[in-house]
Image 1 (cartoon, helix red, strand yellow):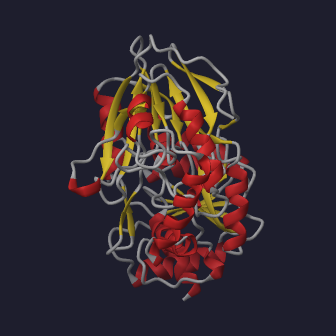
Image 2 (image 1 turned 45 degrees about the vertical axis):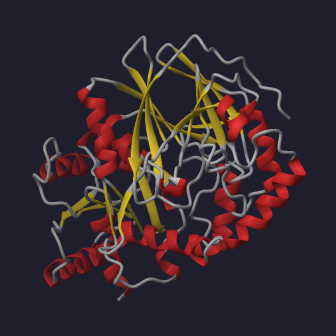
Length: 416
């Protein structure tokens, strides 16, 4: 179906700032309303230090600095689709700047699919409740005075959406630059024929519409690029341009996808993402890893979401989250937690709430709380203190630090 569920407003030109993540060849965007200070972030990336097995925040912090330096108001954090090649920084940025988190309604299909692949238990919520909004085809939302429209463009994954904002469209993993062709369609739930039809919907936008890619790999050694137009794609795209028909595209796509390196195979990619998730939960890859430790592919889309706290549930007794504030402690209690473990030293960064401030709020809510600050490698004393606290504290417990990683590392020592 190439009929568009809206009419694009080419008179509106949003201000688009791109952020390129070289390890994953991903481009994230800050999209600003030209008539206000409102903005949205699209497809942010959480960095991973593979050698150390830990999460870093350089890319996300660059986006945050840009928003703060330009005195922008973050209203939306948009995921065009679920990403198999990187973790989203949206929850981290949301925790710093606020805003609503949105994704396509078929996230529930992706959650269920990968939950089954990795035999994850029912404690992982697969209803999309981790997001503030699940978009349907034809939905709209506001970024300041701009109206953004959403098109369902599946094929790469069932949850893929294209976001059209004025004369700009953010296509996720459907199209690449004209010399890059199109996205693969061999992930679980992907389909080459569906992808072709989705691409035709994108190409039904006015020719002058600016298209912004989610990935670029610099084919044939050219410099990285991320912006083109509908007209350029129609005229020059190596996979769908110049009137390529559906059957020809499907034959090409289905022949091409299996030739990817084994590490790019969906199951291998899932296992790799499992290791990435484990890195955030345990901070070091040499910690024990097993089915009971709930390292789930794209795990930050399976979190339990409290009123104001994003908590990643490891099991029924322990969850982890990033830094919490005294004001959020009430939501922690409302979510059913009985205890809190803080694994973060005070004064790691400016504006960080002190442990004492969080502890006073916790005690006012009747929660037990303990401070086991971790800086660098875990020491034997910290492990002993955590094990002692674990025996004495009521469950469930929420552990926190800057990202949740050090709290997860403490919990992982129980399984040694």
